[in-house]
Image (tube, rainbow, N blue to C red; front, side, top):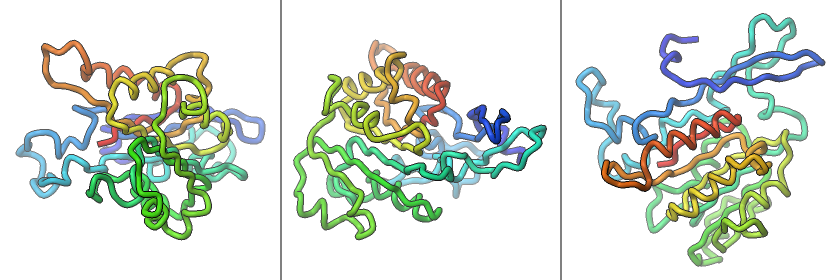
Amino acid sequence: MMPVDNHLSKMHYEGICKGRKYNAFQLVEPLIGLIRDPLTMCPKIPSVPSNLYLEGGYSPQSKRFLLLAPSAPFEIDQSYPLSIPSIPPWLYSSGSQKILIDIGSSYFKSRHGNTYEIGTKWFYDYFKARSIRFDRIIAYEYQTLDVNRVWDELPDDVFPFYTFINVGVQEKIGKYNPWTTLEAIAKPTDYVIVKLDIDKPPLETALIKQLLNETNQARYLIDELFFEKHVTTNKQSTEDKLKESYDFFTKLRGYGIRMHGWP
């Protein structure tokens, strides 16, 4: 490991290969500040080169601090006697699907006229650059969209496996609850990414709390979850405290979900 890696957090895993258990860990970005890119959200620090700071309208949407599984070092316990690829097994296991569930998707290439805050295309570009292809994308969007534009914005190679659901998700267990759909289509061996950003804090919080419920099986299917937790820096407020973000992210990371802040 590089010395700089000591500043990152680690996800620890136990696996089985050829009947023998092994231990592994993988790096993930630390939970810091408002769980956003710290060099866009914090005052400048003299010891940090000024060219690393981002400024302007796009800077609050910076995603460069996110460390996803395909890019994060995956280290096997050196005492293990067998050779195992140094990449997470859920990324290369035979028959494993790559699934993206985008809750609050808007159009594929834009949202509210902006192209810097879109989600689905960002994930598509990120994984395509690493030679990983999604097997299925499910996009939820509450706002009524122009259906023709929805399909026109899709790349040709995305169209066959893209499912667009132009209704809002619901907390109530049923067909409009995203965890119900996830449990129906995913297996534990699949690589599942969920992005939750619907700008409805009470509903978002309720959905996250469902994943913390011991009876909910969806949390065992999610590998990476991107969540824009709305918080206030007003110390007098009794709601949307930053502490709640850390509680949610820490607990879900403890369940094996690579939790990321979505800007």
